[in-house]
Length: 508
Image 1 (tube, rainbow, N blue to C red):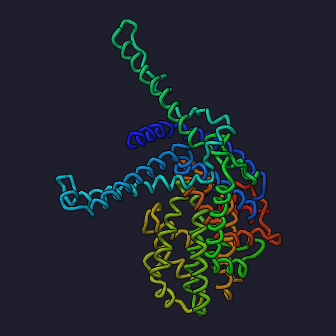
Image 2 (cartoon, rainbow, N blue to C red):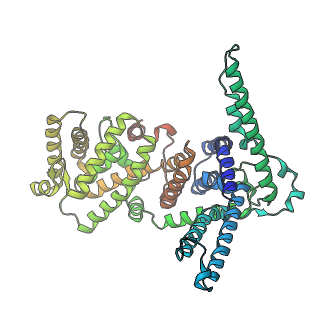
Image 3 (cartoon, rainbow, N blue to C red):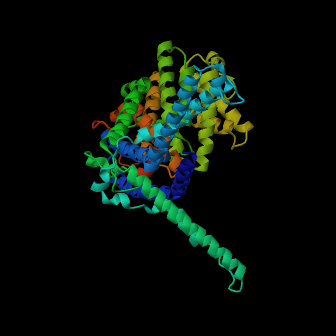
């Protein structure tokens, strides 16, 4: 039994690299087709969900664990382990029966009474060793194993190329040898002979297991997604049970993620954002480099310090910003990944951590700034003065100078805008909402990016993260794609950048 298991695992290990190449080739073909469809279509919530679902099926059906669970060798492994456990059970039963005999007949061993303990330990080990093959075999229960299927499917006698591909590569990849080296020629011939024997054995072993554990085919009813089921052997189609299982797990994750949607962020967007994105146009009066998160954090810092604001309103705004920055950061990390933007984004993260948790902006306590100013213009003026002092002190590449520079430009813009002084809290809340709305219009593109990764071992985790993001932001995306909204007809490549938005909105 152990020898058979060793043979099976050797055969399976030789097929791993070849099977991985086949699956990868099929994945890339489907990925190209799926990518073209997203480029030509508007990414509505329904199309996004279908797109992520397709990649979920590709990632699930092509995962290394699932591929290894499907071949007939997996079923053979479980059957051998089960037989081994059965033999152990018979032996343990015999030992227990022997316990009823007289002391002189109980044990014919120097181990005496410990013989039974040893058998029990071996039996437990055999049972535990059977669990893993059984779980893998259970994953492929949608295939009906039957000897009768031999007569229904002549392809059972065919051994796929990936089983012997690695052996042929080893044989063809031998080093060229000098013609006068007779000894090395003999070594080469012996090695080729050994590899030929291994190839024949590999074919025979795989063929035998396919005959005994052949699976009957079952057609897929969901033809729309059948192309996204990646398989090693095209003639053995994935059963409805597996496809439905993958779809069910996807829908469950989406529903679970929907319950975690950012309610405060959605409320801020609905109540405070404007249709023409005035907050994006008015947040600054210069064209200095900036990023979404730093602008939001800077504006929130000012709002959190304004006097005569109800505690609940301030608290709700901070909750909304806290939820929104999570998705704003995702957009930046996926679409604004240049070196210059990474520096600004890092500065924004550090600044928000201090503002949100410690209520400190660049070393100044927000309470102290609030106590020094009696009116909103005075508070903004204090931020402007402290920002300028920090700019003079630090290197222009440090996070302090970056944050101070952002505050300087934004505070100066607010001071120059005389109309907003009386209702500055409402005005700045509206600007924050508009800026986050503009940024989050890129969420569909982020989801499309996250469903795909070139590393096959990471695909399931990547698609899972994309599905969670879709579930959490589904209502936000629907709100942003409302027909009554007016998303500007900008170049799609410019949408991830706040400076591009401001230049477009401020243009003639």
